[in-house]
Amino acid sequence: MQLLIKNGQIATHEKIFNGDILIEGEKIKKIAPSIKASKISQVLDASGLIILPGLIDIHVHFRDPGAIHKEDFHTGSCAALAGGVTTIVDMPNNNPSIDSEKTLKEKMKIAKNKSVCDYQFYVGATSDNQKEVAKLASKIAGMKLYMGSTTGNLLVADEASVLKHFQTYPKNKPIMLHCEDEKLIQLFSGASKSGHNKNRPPIAAAVALAKALELAKVADRRIHICHISTKREVDLIRQAKKEGIKVTCEVAPHHLFLTEEDQKKKKNFGKMNPPLRSKEDEQALWENLDVIDAIATDHAPHTREEKNLNYEKAPSGVSGVETTLPLLLNGVLEKKLTFLDFVRLTSFGPAKIAGLEKKGELKVGYDADLVLVDPKARGKITNKVLFTKCAWSPFDGWGVSGKIVSTYLRGKEVFGNGRVIAPKAYGKLVTSS
Image (cartoon, rainbow, N blue to C red):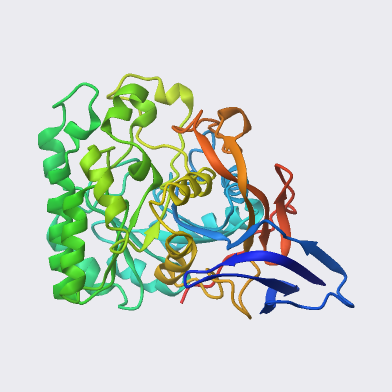
C-alpha cells in the first residue's frame, strides 16, 4: 500500500523544507518538493502541518512485569503514541529485575503481546553478572548501571565492580549510567523532611559522574549519562568530550521545565531521582543543549495513592512520555531551542545512541515513523485525557503550543483524532546494532 503526504513542512536535524513524503508499506520510498499523486491509493494533504520524525524515548519505565498497577506495556505504549513517540527503550528495574537471559526473554514476550509502539530493552548490571550481560549485548540496546539506589533493587556502588562491568561489556554498545554516589546519598539522607534536592544533592551526581568518566577513559568504553540535572554535570561532560572520552548524555523534560521550587509546591508529585534542581541548573541545561545528545523522559509513573504517602515512603518518579512533544514545542516558541535541535534531541540523537536501525530520520529506506503537528493549535495538558495508567502529570494545567494531529508507525496511522488506533500488539522489537 502507498500513502502520499503532500504539502507538509518537513523537519529534520539538518533542515526544514516544504515537500512531500511517499510511503510504501512500512518504509519511506521518496521525499521530494513535489510528488505526483496519480495512481497512489491514499493521499493526505498536510498543508499547514509540520512533519517530524517519530520521537524515540530511550528512557522509560513501563513497570511491566512487576508493577502493572502503575503502568504496563499496553498503556505505556498507548501513552507513547499519543505523545508522538513511536519507539521506546525500557529500563530493567522491574520485579524481577531484568538482569539475565531468562528475565529478558520473559519481558520480550510481554512486550510482544502488549506493545503498540516499537521497543527495545536494557539489561541491568548487578555486582556479579558481568559475563551474562556481555553475552546479551547483541540482543539489547545497552546495559543499565545504577551507581545510586533508586526504584528497584539494581545497584552497583563500588568502583571495582563498575570498572569490571566496563571492561567486560562490548565496546560498540552503550553503558547507560544513573550517576548518583550511593555513599553521599546515604550521608545526606534525612537532611530535609520534604526537600528532595537536599537529600540527594548535586554533589552526589557530580562525584558519581566524575568517577564514571575516569573509569570509562581507562576501560575505553562508551558511556551514556542518564538524566543530567546540574550545571556541574554539563561542565564535566563538555570537558570529557574535549578529551575524547566516549560519552553521551540526556536530559529529562522535568529538569528543563521544573525546579526545586516546583517540588515544594507539588510535594511528592514532583519527587524523582535525580531531584528537581535550582533555577540556575535549569537555565544551564537550556544554555548548553550543544553538549546534550538526547531528551529522554525517564517516564516512571506511580499511582496517586503511592505519591500521597509521606515523603520518606512515597516513591520517586513521574510520567512524561506523552507530554514531552508539546512541552518542547513551547520551548521552540519561546526560542529556547530550534526545530533542528528538537529533531536532533528527540529522534536522530536517541536512535544513534541506542543503535536503532532505520529509525530516527525522515530518510528514504527508513521506517515511516512520523508525527504530523499543527503548530498553530493551542491546548492544555490535563490529567483526565492522559493515556498513562497513573493518570496524572506534574504538568497538569500547563498551556501548550501545537497539537499532534496524527502519529504514524511504520507507515500506519496509530494515533489520530485523540484516539490510539493501532492494531493490538502492533509494536515490534527493533534491531539494535
